[in-house]
Length: 266
Image (cartoon, rainbow, N blue to C red; front, side, top):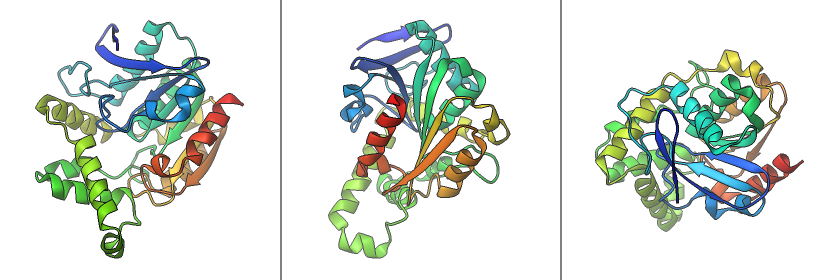
């Protein structure tokens, strides 16, 4: 699949499907080589689905840091313009939802409809869990256990005892997805997490003009329900819905993708 060079960076991207364009912006450590991928769900059967590896991640370039949230939003905007899109639907997941907020605030004309999933507006009160703190954990198994425990609040000692095989599978998925064997890619993720620390658009959400659908997980400890609630309260033309699951509720509750497809189409 292709690379595209904007004025600032060379980005790797993939696309599939036909129809109305949808740009999917991935979360922390997103890498299109890894599974599950956004191309595994039903979006590509309904839209022209496009996604890219953000700066420092996957197969995209790794510019010298530090990075800012503006850098990530500028990358998304320049990427779309380079591809020839003037106005598209945006889906942002977790960190990608933060990027999508900056994109919708700073480049409102390019965002047709906005979907924010398991994300937060930032600031002192409504920030997502500080994932950069987990980077201090060197042991992959310990890292996986800690991440799983905060990403889904249902995972208690009793849950682990009764669902040990599922629990171990979750840990393996987390380790494989968030920790790369390529040291430079881990460096790119760390730069991403550093930029995330300064994410705060709480007082700017009123400037988002696009129709917005906000989706959250009932048991998400990374982007808790209060963060979803405040996004819905402060974005003028928005609606919200919670789904069964934690931070990755969209892998568990397939109704989420059905609702998102319906929102974009209607």
